[in-house]
Length: 319
Image (cartoon, rainbow, N blue to C red; front, side):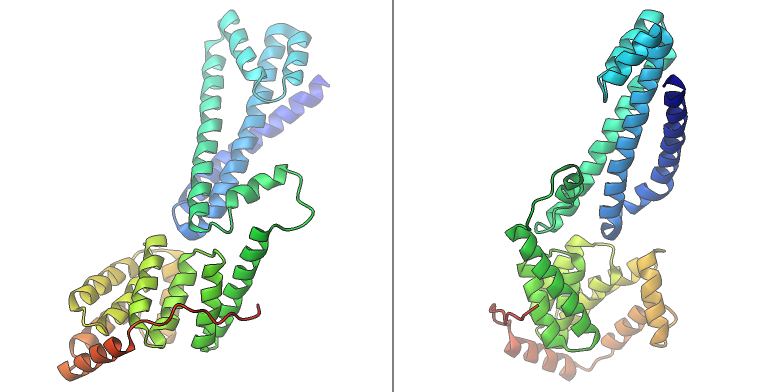
């Protein structure tokens, strides 16, 4: 049994080392963008438990070396962190300060990483109250309910509406897409993408005041997305907010030059439309808007005033 334990100890140490490399090279960078934060935080939470298992096995190995088979049995029986403090006591008695320091550092790393992962999970949950990723992760260790809750059903309805809205938006059925996005948001889907897409529908349908509100919400949730600044700038031209347009278009240009996967996708789309890059497209639009005659600007402002804001009622669709 001791030989089997030693084999598992070596395995967990290797897995812990791999987890450290993945954490530094992959998970920490992915925890910054909101779009990948959920995956990164859940993976970090799992890595913390992997480190916890490795720490327990190391503590048990220390007890084995210090107190022989008796120490090994105690370490195995004290599954979890019960063996770690006992191993610390053994290190103090035997004067093994190096292993004592390693155990203390291990405890700090395990609980520190877990605290970071939980904080990130809660930040994602705060954006999507209908879909709590923390509860979803913890539900792995809980007995699953026999039937979905009302909150689950409502979130599922919102998610289905969101998918249907994206399909309608891609097919340029903006009014239909708008109604789907309304349902998604009412059901608790609070995501930068849904607000950005609904804002685009509102903009196309000339509800520019409402579109500005949605683009602002999208920016609050995803401040690094250049497209939301650009879209908001376009709606601001229809309200006569020249300073707001200039500030947003400049920020859109700045963000579009940042190297990221999202901007790579935007650049491909810009090239399909004949532009060298997204930044070039934004700069061209800024120059074009600056050359608009006053009568066109005045006409757009007047149309926006007459249009006002849309009603708050939602035409519920079957999703």
